[in-house]
Length: 155
Length: 391
Ligand code: SF4
Ligand code: SF4
Image 1 (tube, rainbow over the protein chains, first blue to last red):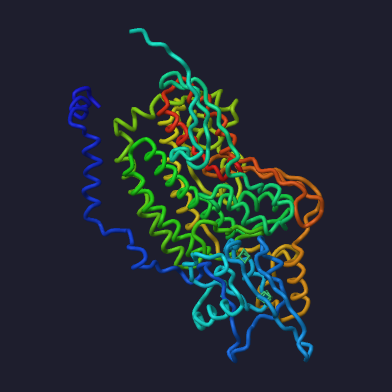
Image 2: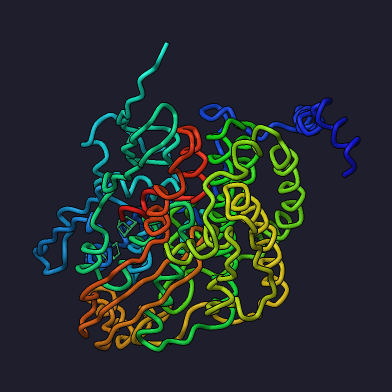
């Protein structure tokens, strides 16, 4: 750059003008921002959102209460308590996921041998109370019912 | 009128917006000149190294996401390579390429956020709006590939967790074709801007020898002109099969460190494009029955596999006694994992050499004698993440 050119560029704020040009050009681009609560982003089916328990086509729960998901979970946030039915089959008394502790790593889904557990595209999990973030079996099954027939994580 | 000069002590942080997290600096000031600076750490300490001692090797992967939460793919990779080296596991070739792609995407997204905050600290807030636009695209790519935007937990011991879908490959290639033009845009905004140049050139100079003596790594080291990049010096994943240049600075000031990090993003694009070109088909998980979980279809089909699945999931795999150190080039520098195994399924000790922690110790040297406003550009230029400094 010659001295004169440099001098002219300096007094006319050349590099600032160049930056301004980019800014003006960008003004006519399509906005990339979303008006969030009104326009929701579309998350891909593999997204690791809220867990869901699945059912067999006949409505029976798939979960066999083996406890592998709880054992594989790095934060140990899945609680399972079982008892014995009169016909000696296994009954699930408690199945709950403490979502506040959950990392959404998806290991529990990998661990489940019968594909009873999956993850869905629900991501708006904020709440005002801690209690409402303890997801019980009924809540997880209800979430699974919403995703029947749809592709979910690790399916 | 004669003025008297007296040094005062000022507390900067831990909630100062430009300390990039919870870094606290105790400054001795003579007017506006910094006489000494002492970083105080530990506000984000979570005891990750201790936590690792009672997790199985598999369960530590999500923990590594939380070190440098801006480039999770790289952390997973460094940890997985350390365990694989300890166990002598060979990873399928496709997995190597996918690991490289994720590591480089993480590098770009980390550098984008670094550029955004660094420029914003110095006063050029516009850059932030542009870089976050591109970073969002990368996060969406991560979500498509792994299911999570930030804490990907993608690299597993023995491979990666999911294969890339054609949709991911198409979108990633498309992004890579558009991205270099965006890097030029960032350069347009600040590279010659007289305020940015004035606030970065000649500030925080670290000479070639000093950079080595302080143990700097990553962009902070290469900004001083030291040609050391672990991707070249000790190649891992697919880095020995791709071509790329290592950009080097000359003077070792804040401006040089900015230049080379921007150039690194261009090189990352080059690496990713080559990976897509060369990536072979094949499995993405090593077929080692003692380590990787069997495929789901087989689990319920025969009882041996089912029993094996139960043992692997509930107990984890064991690692023969021994110790290993592996360092990987993450966006901030050399991330090293030193793992000692006593033959059980969780490490006896896991030491993490985090680049941000080592690079940060150079800050008092960098800012000494400069103005108080230069501290902000120096902190930005060493690119720290407090999650990694404190672990
Ligand atoms: S996603 Fe991870 S942290 Fe959450 S319940 Fe499953 S295994 Fe546990
Ligand atoms: S691993 Fe699957 S089947 Fe076993 S308890 Fe968990 S959800 Fe139920």
